Image 1 (cartoon, rainbow, N blue to C red):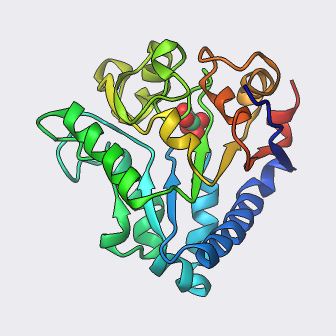
Image 2: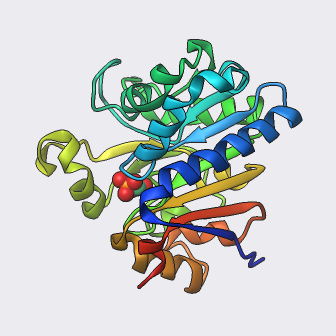
Length: 250
Ligand code: PGA
């Protein structure tokens, strides 16, 4: 298996959002030169919040990007009705897509309320195959090493496709704040697979905070294996990690 070394950009904690937003704008611009309607995968979570804020603040200057790129959500809970505020898609609309003015037709997302979630996963995998490749996969790093909802373990094979998954107790705990308690969190989700993401032309992994330092160190140094799903990023070229100083010091 290839062991590529990702490029790592280290920022001060208070300039993480600004630096990452600047980097993404540069990569989105480049993707626009390569593809008529670049396809970008976007994550939710605390990590990208400051970045979306910077992108929203400066959005008026870059209508070329916001009007032409297509944006795809990385993962989604199962079983919520359209418009539910707990949907990752709703979160992404509030934090980014609505503020920047992404045309509705350029927003690609899972249908959480699909009667057959497995069929919904298959439909998304087929959509990516037919409308891809993914030009840029922007990703967050879970405290347990997950990427999207590809949780640690054999189900997150590096060639895994978009599918229905069960969240680990750790992820349920981490997401409890959004649901008003971890006992309320919907424990099944749809996620782009690691194999789906591995075909992206490039990937940008966002990591900030001291609480991510240990998993970032492990992701960079431990054996490439599904017990740390993020290690798949060492098997593909074109990976940039943007980390703040706190996440780099263990
Ligand atoms: P966070 O989540 O940005 O809220 O830390 C990342 C993740 O779990 O993928």
